[in-house]
Image 1 (cartoon, rainbow, N blue to C red):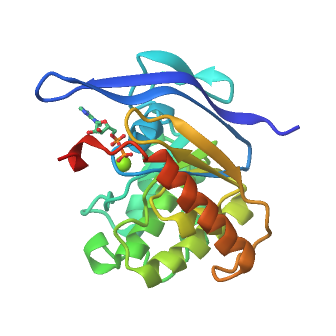
Image 2 (cartoon, rainbow, N blue to C red; image 1 turned 45 degrees about the horizontal axis):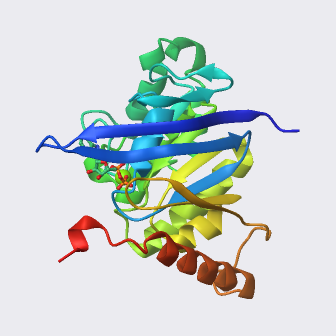
Length: 260
Ligand SMILES: Nc1ncnc2c1ncn2[C@@H]1O[C@H](COP(=O)(O)OP(=O)(O)O)[C@@H](O)[C@H]1O
Ligand SMILES: [Mg+2]
């Protein structure tokens, strides 16, 4: 039996809005992700996806429930959970190489592992761009560098918060393939937040569908067909239809901003 890497049990997270109202971002959310698994989380904007990832990353704490990584409670951010943001998050004053090395430097282990830097540059396909600065490379390349910066710390889980959200569809498809290749090569456990149903089907072992506020897990679907997955194939399109139906069900309650 494979080991559980991430365990989220009965988590609730409520925020206070600027007007002092309570916003129930997550209500009784539970999720277990096992070693080497690729799990995607989909759901409409504002349903608590980022909140959930931030809890797993140790960037925030739940009001109730527990989150653990490798069986230990998550109390603070750790290099054991890598976090890749939607927006460009590279240090603009460092080169690609410098950014990737910064992952090691932050842990004080650069001397020990500096030979890994070129390996991770190659892993994400950035050979030849070592000395480029973030403003000199494309958005897709910048995201690959951000992924390498996290992966070089050999995290138990890589948390990806809509990392392809700001990319055009060609770059996005290229990065999806790169992510699959990295996943296969490194065996890293992945949790990907996306609002792209096709992306979730193309990449994941399991897809977690969340309901709008308060965010709850409405459905967990397994994607059983093998890679490479054909976006126009019958299984792909069949699952896509199922997810669309579930999402419609999941959002049967209109969100407040759409109420007249
Ligand atoms: N720091 C915060 N303070 C107040 N409300 C917040 C805060 N962070 C998130 N929220 C609210 O919690 C809900 C869930 O947010 P989020 O997790 O960012 O959703 P998603 O990533 O699915 O779009 C939203 O209604 C959002 O406005
Ligand atoms: Mg978000």
